[in-house]
Image (cartoon, rainbow over all chains, first blue to last red; front, top):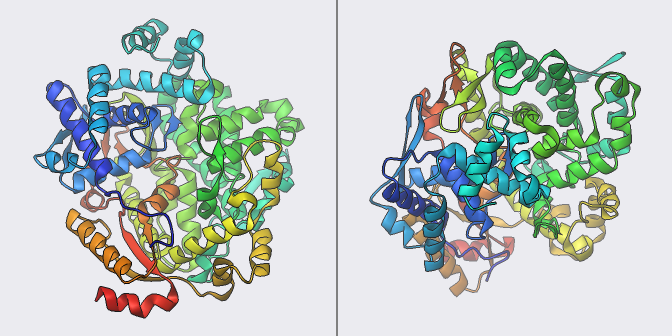
Length: 175
Length: 423
């Protein structure tokens, strides 16, 4: 009997999911930098599918969630991932041997959604994922239609030429 | 342009112009005088009776100081990376002052506690957030006082939609100027900068005190290497003050915001509000329900709580007779801790004792606002703009993480029995 909402889910589930994502990305793209920006944007894309329920806000660097940052930090403290910083390059996030133990908390459909996400977007570098996530955020929250999506993303991130943005969004299957 | 000054307990004086005076005088802003900054924290710390009104003035003051310092320290980056010239910098200084002043104008009664009873926004199928109320009030209620003052018409031509866009982070309206959201909601924003100092002052604790003058003087822009974006940080000489902010936030959270009795009253408060509000929810953030929302403040709800003597949660608040903590996990729990928690809960269930489980993370994120991004503070080089995380300098920061604690509460009359069961 509970006085409030029952909390039966494990506190480690989201961290387990992040560990599974980090492991999948590192396995499929061993030479790619998997940093905090990549994880933020991938989690944003995953949240659009309803697989995770994180709260995102828009910044000049794209959608961002402090909840994702917190869960990633928790995953590090729980020994699920290792995070190191390299000057001039940024963060590198790697899975540990504990990932398997924690990813057992995930349902099959959650793993499948992560697998699909990695397959579709895992090859994009951080700055391109940021453009893709920004495009989706503008569509979902500010009603931007496809015919002006490139202009809207360019308006938010002027340093990327419209043609570059168009190529990235096309490659991501967004338009 | 006439300037006014009023006393402020944290900064000495806060100044504003005629235009800002009219905005401050608007009933929608005056309402913040009747919303306490820390809800029922006063049940534990009697001095915690300060309001969103004085906090909002403080955030405007601090944001201005921070902006001026950044423009002074990083002007070339603003010009080269964000295409600023003098006129743009002057206009956005004023825009930031207004956004800082109004960033909490949509707070519900009892501040963050009531965010859990905000209704669903059918447009995106998620509950409204207090920022939705803030932007709606700015665009619908304060539009005239923002846009039609002679100071604005002559000098700035700032639209209410621009003020709202800075708060919600809308590049559709602001383009790259949305960058300045970092002063309203980020790891180094004026909101956090103010509440740490102000809450400490009123509560009577020293945990939140940090050297804000040093922070202002060391703010600088750099480039974050992975995203290649401009980032707000502090220069290398200021990393100790950045460390002090992280420690201050942790201490205030652990000892004040997440105090076990304060959280007990958050539980009663949420239930009491659900009891007295129509449909158990706050009115929506859009017109016409927005007008009903604005009519709600702490005073209105206190009156309703006082009238509902038969409701257990209203009565708990009026009589300070609250649920009791009987078990808690460590601040950062392990899988073993989680297993032990589940076993304790099963024991309570087997004994027929009802309990309430409180998780810290929700409050932690509410205070950091997701909105109030919790990225790591970056230490930047003034020479070349390179950035490195604060944890690369501070071993204390490296070891302070988010608090992920769970507490279990029972009704006061069940406390002895529950303690016996868990012993």
